[in-house]
Image (cartoon, rainbow, N blue to C red):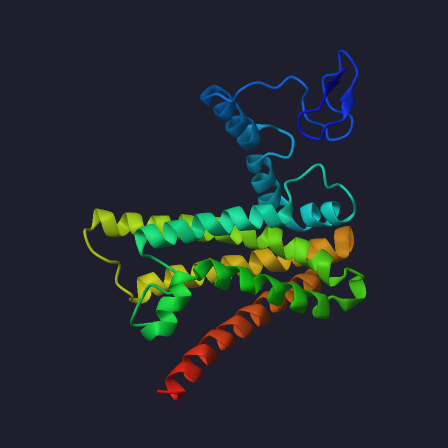
Length: 250
């Protein structure tokens, strides 16, 4: 009688999957072909793949989070794994291009700005509990607790990171084509404002879907938009408080 190489469970002859942990019983040494197959499968497979999750979050973000909270957890990628991966991608693009984050020394001078740029991933992840807390407070009657609000915020923040990555790549591409940095004039700030507006509209819509289901109305969307505004204001205040405290000691 063979045993599962993953958990040691005794296997009957002819068993293809371990009944205890679910691993395939037929294992062999890894090859590059195996790794390529797994990456392709994880990216493009119709069931709970990265691409299908992103598509679902673009079309019905609140419903995806709601279904996950209500028990359909095998259907989708884990929201927190999705958040960590997407945040890592946008931080990588920011560091490689020098666009976004706290990379502008004029806007974010001194050691505090350099610290925030170096630990940009922590700053982005720190906004997640702020969003969840404001969502919990403003939709208190929906019955969703703080942990369930974190699921919504993790999914939406992951999409926000991917959208920011596209924006940063576009700005970096413009700089490369014009062999110089994009001016921080009206055109640049209009694009930044567009990113913020898209995020506010998106998160407001997601909040309304998540908390109210099919019964959501326009004022639920406005309440969700207010959640995003309050979280953005809170995180901005904390950043500038860090700057103020640092320079007050000098």
